[in-house]
Image (tube, rainbow, N blue to C red; front, side):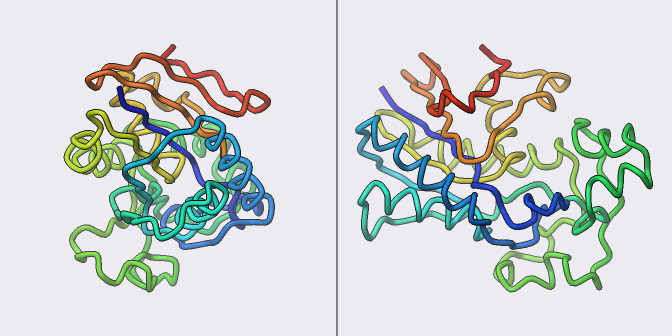
Length: 237
């Protein structure tokens, strides 16, 4: 038996401001820090001994994991950081207010950019300070791997090879905790639950609510969110 826990980072500063964030490296808002600590308390109740901890290159996910580990009283944990687990890149929408873009582009168009499977926003100009090439956290990522924009499909194709090679391969009789982002976790869930291209955009991943997945030989036995008060319907089950 193995356990996999997926946690979307707590509310970020730009979540609070309702801005498209993507690869911009913003930190947690105060509510997000509290969500991370609550996630840690919920995970603590499961009494799981973890073998691996994974997160992205983005500090909102990294700090969520650190707050969880602090709550679990785990010190000196080896945290594996992978840019492949980063949030989806929102292209030219990056930094813009979602409600203002609905007024400018129309709600239908913004919804298409946010939730369609294979429609990316326009690319973000590399001269823009929000472009990943201009963000210190990504200086070690090969330039050919840094996107200008991404659809959910692009994100899936970035996340999945890393997940299957580096994470799923370690899941046999091991316990793994991943702190990442709404769309990178959506990509993992698409694979694990064999969701169709039409279904996956409808899957909601709430901030700071751990998704507990128990597996036997990589076959899912049970799956549920640990915070019953903020449970979102998991469309796979």
